[in-house]
Image 1 (cartoon, one colour):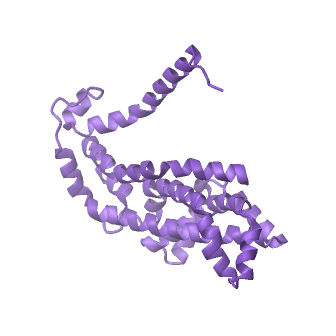
Image 2 (spheres, one colour):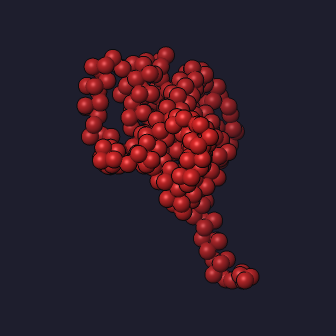
Image 3 (cartoon, rainbow, N blue to C red):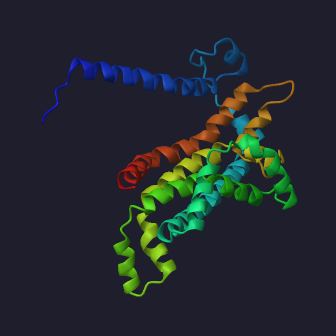
Length: 277
């Protein structure tokens, strides 16, 4: 049945466009002010730059030591995402396919961990990390991300694994596939929509995270990530907003490109999980 384009539809479209533009306002302020000298940034914050300059980007690149900060963020994000997806998918698969009292209790604990605010466990985290020698290293930070990211990932995988027909796995076992082979060759490829969704959501969090790296890594130049490097523009008596905005644009551009290139998979993954689960 053909739907007519009515005045109500037009009004909803206009409302959606205006709402979308409102969400883009912060991006306008960050991007336009990153091309202004500091004096113009303070005097004409809302206006477009009168004489756009790349000096802010050049100085921010050098002061932040951007290539090193970028590599630190990239290594921490990639390794954390790979570990999170493998650990969470295997744990969820085990809980779904081998139900027991212990597995139900473990799943309940994972779900309960999702509602615990990070600020409430900061002090215990510092004590445990110091006890195991995890302070000041990327490895320690990655292990912390495993702990904080696994509960939500297990919850999402748990619902998706239940949607996979058990007959597929039984056929593979009849053909001689081992238990691990069934998971790795049959189940894990079928989890691709949810894996992409989890990878994207956790990438946005880990790439832009400031609090946890500042606690575990500190402010050492050789291990700091992009958010920590951007923080170097803010001191006790000075705030270099012109350089900070340029550094912010440099830092978020890679993750925005990554998100836009794969964002359709988030909708596919969440939709698939909600329909089949």
